[in-house]
Image (cartoon, rainbow, N blue to C red; front, side, top):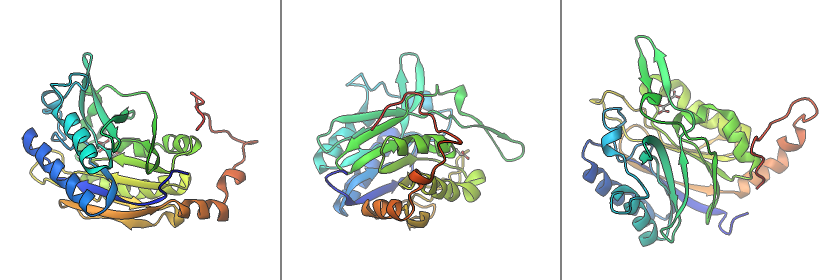
Length: 287
Ligand SMILES: O=C(O)CCC(=O)C(=O)O
């Protein structure tokens, strides 16, 4: 168990514009406001510094190794240090070698980067008359599941469409996660029916806390975002706190003793029929 087992998480459901500097200033204010409300873990949305549109990803991308050329990365590090909090930094377009990735950076209260995760399941969809998008035209998929030990527990990271893959959630459970964070930007087509369902399903099958954070809705944009940043608890997969589609900060309490109690009462790990079927972690990293 981590040192801290009960704490507040803040989800910054941010309005994102095509002005990058404005997005950075806005995110900084929102993280600081969440910290002032007692959050020791603050999470940002998928693509918090860049509109969710293939027209912008290249222009807004940063190379995180170029210390003079990564203002978004540097701002997150500074704010984590300045407020003594852990930040799951949503996602931003990352330029690495000649490729672009949809990447989440996690910073500790000392301002250091603790982990970096690039979205593994890119959102390629073609529902005629509804939504059509090919994220893989722009981004290259990551291939490293990422779990990070922080002051507020062991956190597994996924980004948006990754939430549809129970295998990733189960892998994080197998590696000892306490919480899975999914920065996301579901849309109004798939969001209404599936966003809450997927979050509650991942919490139910992994018996873990699940937290999601989305940008707020911009109805003028080409991609209309669903919003509804949420924290789901392990007990009955209940919604601990959620939001609508407008800009807001969701503050919720996470208490890992609930996970322990649930697992004692309903020991799915012991009931699993490993003699009949097996979950395979191909990299076999143990917690
Ligand atoms: O899986 C979905 O329905 C939505 C996923 C998505 O919007 C994304 O990955 O950006």
